[in-house]
Image (cartoon, rainbow, N blue to C red; front, side, top):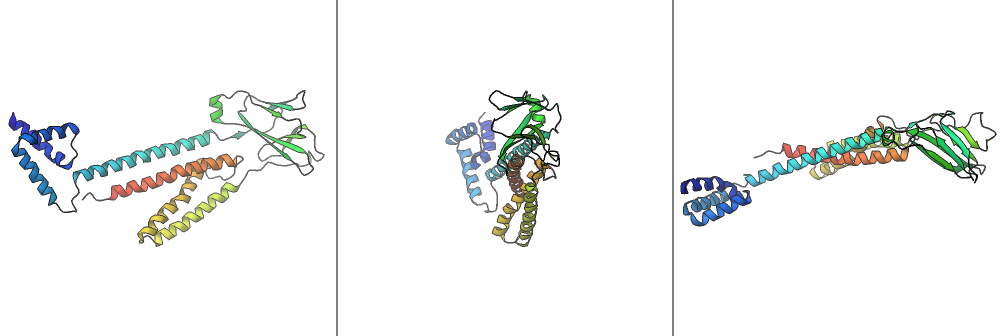
Length: 294
């Protein structure tokens, strides 16, 4: 029984010496070494041999730490990838499909206080209402109505808009088409070629700037790749415009036009932030995997 116990203890001694044995095994070995001179002598000889190892030798504990670090990188990388996919899916599911104006799209009712109530068709899941004062001093209100896949799943119910009594003219705006007068004061020029609602294009400018910055930074990175500090900084800077470009593609595809520029820009930045972290983690993981184990 004593020999069997010593055999077991000696199998555990390498782990015990490296400090990576379990708590129960550590207690067992410690108690045994107090009473067994042979095992204690072997343990002391292991410590002497360990002290003589060359500095290039990687202890078992260090290898274990490296494996744990790689596993952590892989888990974070997977989580970041899932988050980027979820944001992209949300962007597409919440993309507005705008309704063109029809007589059945909305019903207009004037209330006792002079305000106007707009009741949209049941297919409408959302709307925007923007008021402004024109060059003649009249207050105008533009309406746009849409539906999204996400809102259809949420079943938001009937949509209504209440326009204040001080609004002079109410328009319905269909992207790319002439605005339709629906209530209030009708301008003299209406029907002879009115205002057309056009998309915003500044997202194209940001995407183009990101491409230019990525190209210039990439060239500098290649030229200065042998200078460790400069290359490390340029690597991180290079991934910033690349992440924005990927974010733009995830949210808008290869189009830069938008009728909801603030929303789209926010989602692009959010996606780019996640993608940037994903790129840095992926590069770090590749570097960890590329390190020799000896």
